[in-house]
Image (cartoon, rainbow, N blue to C red; front, top):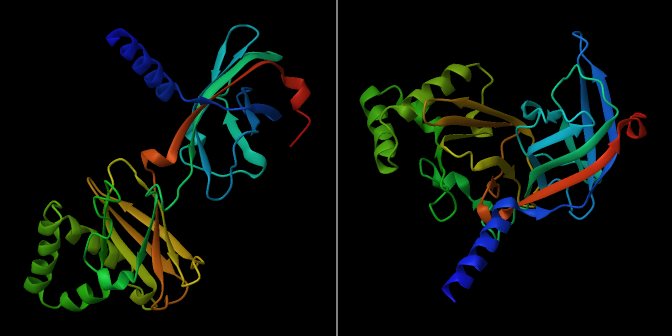
Length: 288
């Protein structure tokens, strides 16, 4: 009985590790050449069994295309380093440039992440009345492994006239949330240096000091009372351990505004495999 349990565990573990099978088909193959006469291909695959939109996203993990000569052409992941959405459920696979000539991919195989964030799986976290939570970590351990300290930059600017009080208040936050001493101080110096122009309005800004080693925070939105996103500019400064995140809105948010964090959590991600065989390239290179 013990051996049977071990076998069942191994099967489940293997399934979890290698993912589920995605139903895909080739839509188009874009072919181009470089100045050094190298050729690269961008394959567009339609994923037929998944819904992909602005909320449900995909990210290519790896892919390789084997030609009729047995040469493997790997996906150039430099061009795909984040989640993205595509109309018609398309998955992009840009290959690395090659000088070899071929007409057929005998096999195309790879893996991708499918991200479906919801409030229920804790990958969407909504913070109501955020300005009542200044200088605190608004992502608790229950919601995320990351820290996001919402900084009251307007008040700190006023405090800066009193150097001792300013440093004391900053140090309190660092100590409370186990942040290396002087980290927030350095982030604030960068913020004020980059936002010292006369028309800078701190009331239009949400400024965070984040520690997010595993890049769990994918996006931060500022929403109005109807859950519509405010328009603005999103900026990031990376430091040795943490990062400064600044959202500069086009207008001052009202009192009913809220923050929406999109977080990569295990319960919101599934791994899918795909495989195609004997793909004749000329059949799919008639333009996008």
